Image 1 (cartoon, helix red, strand yellow):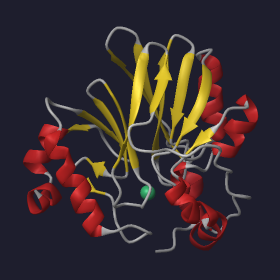
Image 2: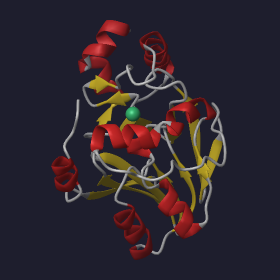
Image 3: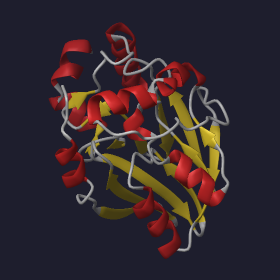
Image 4: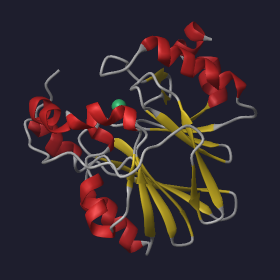
Amino acid sequence: MKISPSFLALSEEIISLESSKIGRLMEIDRLIVGPLRTNCYILSEGRDCIVIDPGGDHDIIIGHLQKKNLTPTKILATHGHFDHILSVSAIKLKFDIPFFVSKKDEPIIEGFRKFVKTYFGMDPGDPPVPDKDINNEDIFRIGSKSLKAVENPGHTPGSHSFMVDNAMFSGDFVFNGSIGRTDFGGSYSEMSNSIRSLKKLEGDVNIYPGHGEFTTLEDEKNNNPFFKEIF
Ligand SMILES: [Fe+2]
């Protein structure tokens, strides 16, 4: 599907911010950014923060960080699709911080420029350069909190979610009422295994997806047609 530049121009204006808290101290800000309305999450405790999936509108993201006087320590991508990494280079340059993404998605990242030119008729410049790999169970500190990477391939070979307390930042693995597509470098059988792995999670989990509205694991187990088919 070819998406016209006018869609791009329109979507750049659709940016919203919501904040919620985990525990007493940690804040989650969501900025909806870029041509595919990606949920970019900024997790902070005090001034310490991590940026997840900066998928466009770098000026908005940087402006938000500055307004809240936050100091980002790293950029994490749930996966390598362009709409989750469009603003990585600008944010890296501004704050001189490393970009973490799974090495398994590097072939997808290398195709970034051609893909955006083909489907969006714009040149995003060179793809961002990954600094560090992400592997299953890697831990990232935010103040007193630990954010854990959980490997869940399927949407792409290197897809990861990030978990802290009962919050899961799922990227394009699980959406409210749906799952990520598997035809842009992914695998449906791997996706099925990743969905099944959610069975072992205990308690209810709040899911913050890469696009669309928030949900819970309980809601998805009960209502998501893909879960019903795969579980
Ligand atoms: Fe994606």
